[in-house]
Structure formats: C-alpha cells, structure tokens
Image (cartoon, rainbow, N blue to C red; front, side, top):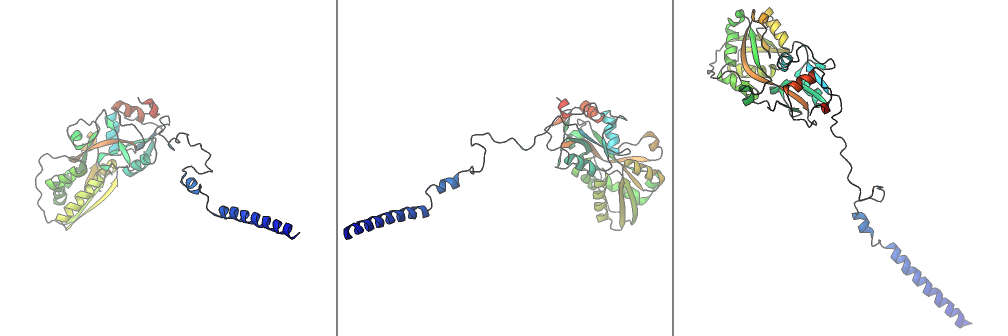
Length: 313
C-alpha cells in the first residue's frame, strides 16, 4: 500500500514539473515578435501587400471652367492688355474684376483653374508666367520687342508742373543713371544713355499718384532720391493709371503715374515721359501644367470663347 502511494506521488510530481516547464516558456517573449515589429504592413491594414500605390491626392483637372481674373476699368495694365490682345471692350462677362495687382496675384495663386495678368515687375514665385507665342517675358525680349505684351511706365505732368524746379529735378533723377538702374532692377530701363545725377539740395514736397503697377518702382525712386536730397518729401498714392492721369490734369497731383500710353485727348493737357518699360505677364496657378499660349488663345479666354483648359491643344 505504501509502495502504491509513493508511486502515485512520484507521478504527480513529474506532471507538476512538466507543467512548470511549459509555463516558463509561455512567460518568455515569443521568438517571432521581432519579425512582426519589422513588418511594414500592420495587421489591421486591410490592403493586400501586392496592391499598387494609391494615386496622388489631387491632379490638375483640365475640364474645370477657367477662372478669369481681370483688372478694373481705368487700370493701365488692363488698358495695355486689352489693346494688345484684341480683347477690347469684349471682356468675358464672368471675369472677376480686381482693383489691385496684389489681388490678381492672390486670386490666381489660390485658384488652380485661374488665369490673370500683372506687370512683369510684380511677378512672384507663387504663380507661373506663360510664354506668349513661344516667348517668355524678360529684359531682353521686352527691349527687343519679341515679347508682344509690353507697355511703358510713364510719368504724366502738365507744362506748369514741368516748370517747377522740384518736379523737374525729381524727373531728372528718374531719367539719370541712378534712376535707370532702379528701373532695370525689376523692369527694363527706358533711357539708352542716361546722364549722371547731381544732387540739387532742394527742399519741398511733391505729390505723386496713379498706377499701382508703377508704384513699386516709384517707391524705390523716392527712397533713392531723398537719400541724395534729404530736404525733399515725396508723397505717393495709388488709385490706378486713370486716377493718376485725371488728378495730374486737375493739379491735385504734381506727377501722375501711368502704365499705359496717354490717349490723344489726355495729351492735350499732359506731357508723358517713359521712366521704364514693362511686360504684362499672363499668369496661371503653379499647379497648371500649361507653359504657354498664343496671343489669339489669350484673347479667346478673356472674351469667353475658350472656357475650359481642355479646349487648348
């Protein structure tokens, strides 16, 4: 009897030892854990590993309606644009009118189907300038005339104001070597052989206003001129070429700024002087794959004959 009990106890001890060995293995980290951790596809990802990668989140949709942005009536940039392209008075009825260069840039930058036009000197990396008939705007193509969308930057003054020593001295500066170097910094200089400028030592106030395209250049002219003539003060305002021409004619401004040629009736009261040359860049959103248009295609877009990018070959 004692022998039988001893045998049963021995068997129970053996079973307990085997269970203990199994429990020890279960508490250790499984040998396949590192393989699971290195697997690039988590267990909860339902996509099979051999599926192709997903397409880009968004591609340019050429079938969307073109969003056309234009400047307001009276803008020198608009006047130059419609006259050169042949748009004339037939601007697309759905075109969104913006009153400032900055508004055109922002509108095109934030609308991937947008198109607009701005001064070449106002271009930014946030938008893309298109070739026109295969030519990009640049100093060389504007100066040699191969880029067709170009216009002068003018100052417009009455004969009376031309007789004012303050006004004449500032104009002399703008046409000098120093002034034309500023014109060439972002635009194209208008004077082939400018003279050196000598400080006049004058003091007083000059009021200048008009084209918002010319305004950035005029601000640079102002700073450089006042550095040489600290007694001078020059007040600059925008408002567009039409405003500059009208207020110069009325004597509200000493100098009007215009980014278009004066009309015949305007020349009766004003003298126009080119201080720089500028191209009008046709711009699209940076996501647009288009690189260029013909001048005819530009006109067709801005009169509403082409309304989708897919219509352009």
